[in-house]
Structure formats: C-alpha cells, structure tokens
Length: 217
Image 1 (tube, helix red, strand yellow):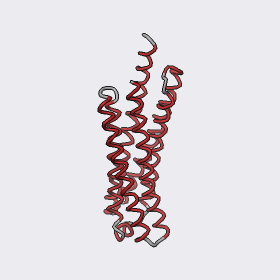
Image 2 (cartoon, rainbow, N blue to C red):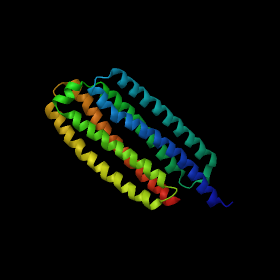
Image 3 (cartoon, helix red, strand yellow):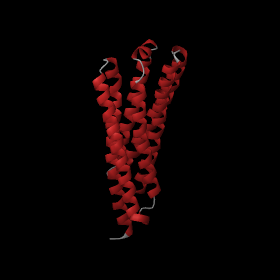
Image 4 (cartoon, rainbow, N blue to C red):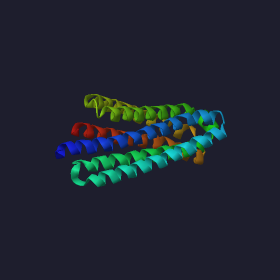
C-alpha cells in the first residue's frame, strides 16, 4: 500500500473521531437550547440535570480530543496537514467549554430580569441559531468522506448563520444596556450573549477547517 493511500486512511480515521466529537457537542448544544424553557418553568431539577449532562459531555469531548491527539501522533509525518486536524479538535473542545460556561451563567440569571427586558426571546433565538450552526458542522463532517462538494456548500450556510448571530448579538447588547440596570444581572447576561457570539466564531473556524480537510481528501 503506497503512502498516499495510507495518508487517506489515517485522515478518515481521524475524521471519524472528529465526527464523534461534533455529535456530542451537538447534544450539549441541544441541552443548552432546552435550558431557557426549564428556567421559565422554574424546573430546578431539570436545570440541574441539564447542567450536569452538559458538563459530562464536555468531559467526553475532551477525552475524544486526547484520543485524536494520540492517533495523529502515532502516524507521525504520514498526514501532511496534521496541524489542521489537531487545531480542529482543540477548537471543538473549546466550543464544548463555551456551552458549559454559557449554560452555567444563564442558569444564574433571574428569569424576571430576562422577561422584563424581553431578552428571553433574544437569548433563545441566539441559542437556536448557534445550535443550527453546530448542526451544520455535523452535516459537513458527515459529507467529508462521501460528497465534498456538498460539504463546501454546507460551509457557506454556516457563514450565513454566523453573520445572522453577529447582527442579533449587537441588537441584544444594545437592548441589554438600555433595559437592565442591575449590575450583577447586566454582567451575567452580557457574558451569556458574548459567549454565544464567540462560540459562533469558533464554529466558523471549525467549518473552515473541515473544508480544508475536504479539499485534501
């Protein structure tokens, strides 16, 4: 078997781990999307279980990141763009960390504050958009081994979502500064909104990395 074929096999094996990683991140993002509803219902048990589930998934993603680091190290110089694979895995690990941080801060905001400023709607929409972005990442990586052209098209869709999140992030920030006067609540909500926007940027970085992988297969 020639080295080029070995490289392709090594990349496909690494992509399989990345796919497992993004599946878990998608599950965590969906848990995050369910959190505002649990807060509205004042379901303390549900909120606690959701936070614990998100934390568990973050640990699983970290373990998968370590796995892909070991596997890339094992093949040594066989993979030409191994740095891209590793950077992708580490960025995905960061996304999982963002979800944990956003969920924790969101769960500590008073629902009355969100409702009075109508920010519950804005934050829910932002979370829904970032979940859509993660879902697109999941579709991209599923297409890498079968339809690279489709993967590239899906990446363009993640860019559109990222731009929409940027617009809604700015709108929510302006509303926050105008409507919320309690400093503690303002800082918590600000961190949540900024966390979602930064998470979206990380998703876009992963999308770009997936395209580089698609072009190298």
